[in-house]
Length: 298
Image (cartoon, rainbow, N blue to C red):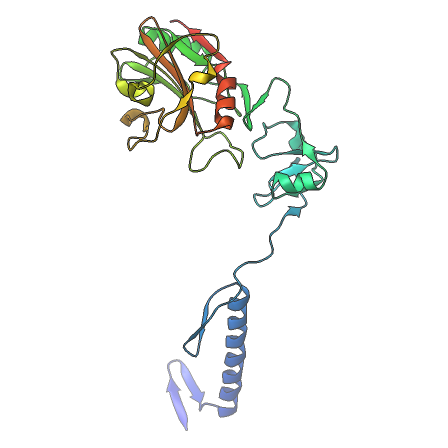
């Protein structure tokens, strides 16, 4: 018996060949089921759910990788340890070490220390505070802060030290302003793993006249203001509780909510500086940032 096909004629189906195909399909199905099982997936077999292993071995140390003339560690093992016995956490300030091949890459600092490595000292001029590295600020510049002060009509605290890599906003006339006040904020700097839970990398400096927008005065005006000193008294520091109106830049809100904050006043202007989070680490890092504040006039 023959069967007509478009484009030609075909012989009848070979039953022996069909049996071979069926056997191959059965073997392939068994292989797929085994692969799914090995990947930790739930497989249904004869209407019964078969639970399989979901966790594989964790990589805790691996060799470094290279790209061009630079060396790096993967996201799974980001802590770089070097032959001189020092290791560098992921938020350590960038430097020339990227041109040197690490000895090994670890999943975390505890494993690096267990193998005898010790935390590298901060680079020259960098302050290690609260687990952060506080460096000279690249932005805003002093001139940009002067432009903001001239635009606002009152003195502005200019952050000259910020968490690494030291980039705040580019300020100037019409920038770093909110209504009648000034808001200078730095975001997105890398944090150590133990920094805080459910909080962001966020530093805020504000200045607002006493009759200006109240949301720029921290903690809903419930904090007693103190006169400016070179370094405000840490015993007066407090944490502003979280609010439903988080700071959304030009859309408003309360920029100091959920932050450790210090506030003071001078010549009818209320000032504040804060860092998001709650704890000794945040207070220590904030002290290093405050130590680099410079009051500038327009």
